[in-house]
Image 1 (cartoon, one colour):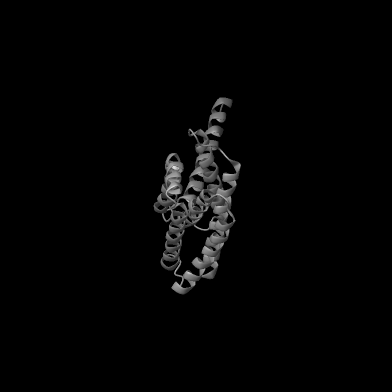
Image 2 (tube, helix red, strand yellow):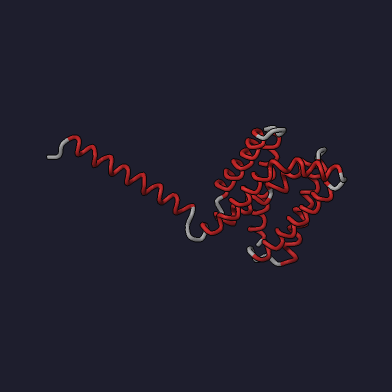
Length: 196
């Protein structure tokens, strides 16, 4: 007859196996062979966003002084639209004309947002956080809840890091702008997938 201590050890060993198995299955569902190689894109993009934080303010100040800030933001939007069209045609196999129409519609939405902003620097949130959910969808597949959480955490993390930098501040308004930009990116992905 097993002693109480031996029985307790077997029970603990079984619970550890169950926990380990559950963790393994969860990790496999998130990072299977098809998604693992793609994770580099959203992770590298997030690292780029975070690493650029100390330099963004100085760069926007220089562009504003030289009168090039609006032109630079416009150029970034055009580059973003070109990348979006290329991705829709190549990855989603959407015909060129339809992809251009979707990009034009997205450009109109971004233009309306830009026109409504008093401070041009705030529009940078939409350029930075619009593509992020698309990269997460590409890496993880159609896991909308997970992508939304990852984008929300990334946008909040951006502001937390800014709060620790000298001369920069944490602002809930900027967190909100990051989240709205991510929501637009999620909406763009859903529309592009349904139009296909």
